[in-house]
Length: 403
Image 1: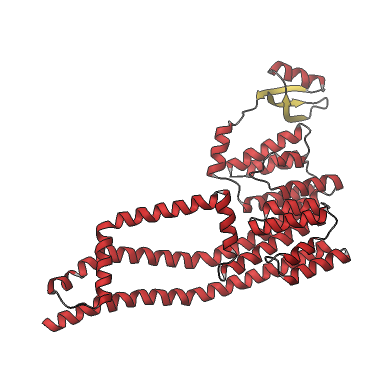
Image 2: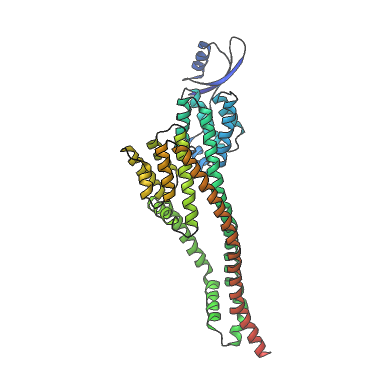
């Protein structure tokens, strides 16, 4: 088991750390053999696997937290602070309890002599293969700090890219959701009370008013069934797209949705080229880089393209050959990658392509937001007009005829 100790060396300097031994007395003997006088020794508190899993499900580790972590780690290492001390300092400042547990486990593993990349690889729920391989490349080349900066830059770009899309969709989603909720409440609970006048007078009503009244009466009587069906349908859809087959089908269909599909394609192109460029720039072989990217890109068609490109390169070909044949990759991108392969500037060209498509996504999301606002206004106006023409106008005419 592990023991946390405080001990003084021959110069009287206080040292802190972790020692592994069978018992407290054995830990004390190990310290003394290493020229340390124990001050305090206590058994390290181990977090149970169940508690750790619960913490992961509740908090997880967000991309923003990872970006901040790697920024801090890069600054501390550049300032010549030991890796273990840097990890411990960051862990103590981290509010996310699950992430704090991970960082302390990594620190302990490094203390025990494990390479930093191997310690990170033990936590795949927090750190992707991209991170692990860039760290490993930095350790081999002696440029660990540079690799950490690469990781932070790459994560930050991906975070901003996704945030722009989410920001563009939050407003219209909120407005449309609120409108649907209000419309449901009006049709289910308010219109039935208003249409009592029309029913009492037994007036001759147009077909659209009869249809609205029939819908309103049905929802007033069975609104809970409708909500239950919507909840079950939504749950079934979410469950299906989380299954392997459903996930693959949804990711493929996503690219064919008008407007949204084009934005998604550009996002995955930016992610593919950015991550591939970072890995190649970090000294990772092409085949290995393509395999890593295929696992983190987040879209099945693009994953398939990356794996096919890796197989092509493995047999002596060029990745551009596969890209030219893939409908997901624009011809211009494939042509630029071919030029990069021939000129030896592939990583630079990939980063330029990623920058271009990131800017395209930025522009498209801004245009989408500007376009959706008037569309939502028109939709809301049509809804109000249907209620006015279908319900209020007939009531006004019936009351006017009997006045």
